[in-house]
Amino acid sequence: MDCRITEMTPFLRAVCGRRGGPAGPNPAAPMKLVLPGLSVMVAIDLLAVFDRWRVIPGGDVAHTLILLATPWLALLIAGRSPAAFGYHRHRLLLNLGWGAVAGGAWRLASLLLNIIALGSSLQAERWWMWISAILWVPFLEETFFRGYLGRSLAALVGIWPGMIIQAVVFTFQPYHLGQGWPGLVGVFGFGLLAGWLMHRRGSIWAAWGAHAFANALVLPLVPFA
Image (tube, rainbow, N blue to C red; front, side):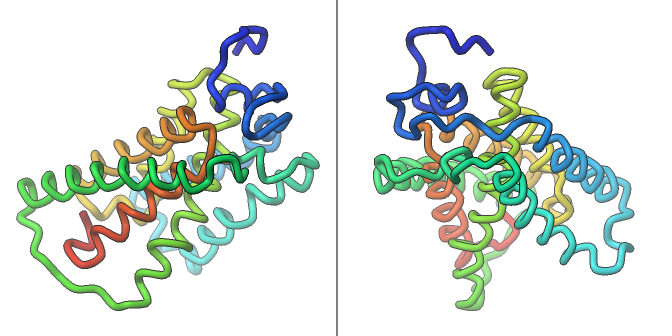
């Protein structure tokens, strides 16, 4: 990617490390620190696709720990601030709001697809699921796939190729494969949407807002939409 261009989106300013953007001089994490995490996620995806992941003892716990620790370990090694993942305060609430609007639109489309394709029924959820869906899951997944993988891939191969790669890796995670093809189409679409929000708004909070609001919409309705 050519960082010498004069007109850049907030995302490109953050990736290239140019001053004046909302994130300031905070380039993405170095690709050499992202490749290990990307490789592990691709390996997990392949195990899940070939139905081998579920036979690994403690696999779900290990997966969560990898999602949680890998980005922040890379950040520590690189000596960067969380702004390298798009975590900055610039227009935080506005970015969350735009994300919520986009996530709500995606969720309604995903629900419609599931209802038409699978005949999904309505079902209530436990209250504690809200905490996980609105805070914990967006923190894990947006940090890893959009902040850690997406920004570095965009810097290496370009905006759209980077968005597509992270969306594909995100789609074939073990906990997504049981949703059937309509669910996987929806998950891939959300991966692209969250990546685009990160690019367009230059902030991970937009992707957070989309993820949290989409999860909040589905909890009282169909858990697997």
